[in-house]
Length: 443
Ligand SMILES: Cc1cc2nc3c(=O)[nH]c(=O)nc-3n(C[C@H](O)[C@H](O)[C@H](O)COP(=O)(O)OP(=O)(O)OC[C@H]3O[C@@H](n4cnc5c(N)ncnc54)[C@H](O)[C@@H]3O)c2cc1C
Image 1 (tube, rainbow, N blue to C red):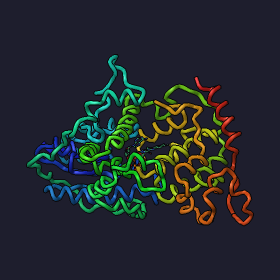
Image 2 (cartoon, rainbow, N blue to C red; image 1 turned 180 degrees about the vertical axis):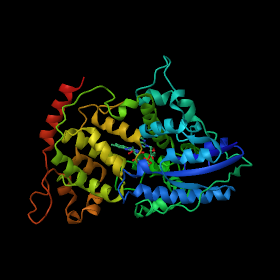
Image 3 (tube, protein in one colour; image 1 turned 90 degrees about the horizontal axis):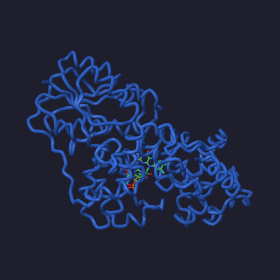
Image 4 (cartoon, rainbow, N blue to C red; image 1 turned 45 degrees about the horizontal axis):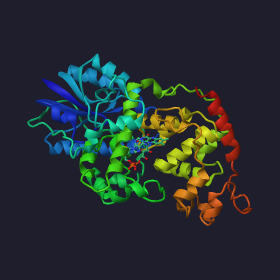
């Protein structure tokens, strides 16, 4: 029986569930899905990254004696053709995003689908409370997984032996320009192999806990995008870092990723709706939103973060928390607007983590930051980057300003020679407004 191995968010050959469960004649495939690509900008960096990753996967599969057929089109039409070519089933890894669920339902009407779970450590359905309902708060969820995160090693998948490449009609790989995209320059760390990238991080993991919040330092792993597209599995990361002193805190972060996937799986409506049923009187001022997107708010840390983000698709976790809090609370703009903007640009965009984290920041989510917790971007700037290295490296006209002037609200106002926007809001006034909007309306 000929089967299709459909690679989607598992672009690797090691610890890959579909390669482990495959038998006999197989055709590994990847589809550049026109339904997804049509919604993206021509210069979307993620498409460049996926493209280079797909080419590497093709080489890695060839080393195993297989190959990768790369298609560009509508999955429904491609599977209808593959059915006619004699394929009987599709093996793929689970994907719980709303579009993926709907797409899989359509494909299932064409060919039998066998799904495997290897993008996360644990299937969300396997971990519930004693009363069989899902956890809603991170700490008890995490504590109850003690046996898993205390283990030294989690068994990995090994590719099945004796697989044969099924005959099929596939020729050359479409180029990026065939698909309407332009190759983009990516951050240097994305040109390394996943194992080299992980080893670079392991060399500094000892200092992860103390450095991870200092956004001018390179203290975190930058593994988000590799996890998102499955160039490395969470088990591979877990098993490698577990051998290192000081890995506990990092492993806990990996479980935040698990937790948000868990929440979206059990509460799919939270993609669009507040998790905790609160109602907030947002003002949704479009001019403020645009200033936030463009990095023109007059708050140097917010502006540097957004400008850097627009150029690179990268944003440090603490800066995500600060800019999200600023948008939802100081500017009183609906978290869904910010979530969508991040979804469009974040290199490591993952629906579950993005939605969960935005709801956390807005105070509407699972385990949410309380409504009265409003990050002060000036205090955060001073605390986590005292020398203002980050701001000064991103905004050229601020390069010569003193750190003090950059950490104080309106601190640049006295500099008549500086062409820089004035703060669009007052932190104190907007804070009071937010407290009223959230405390009155939150149920
Ligand atoms: C508003 C907002 C939006 C976010 N959107 C996303 C998103 O779309 N995709 C995404 O992967 N993460 C998201 N995060 C979580 C976090 O910011 C990123 O995972 C992290 O910055 C990625 O960088 P890193 O790999 O260097 O992280 P590290 O600090 O090295 O952490 C290692 C891994 O743990 C996981 N992780 C760490 N923190 C979190 C967290 N708070 N929630 C979920 N997983 C976490 C990630 O997979 C990360 O790669 C968001 C956070 C906020 C506040």
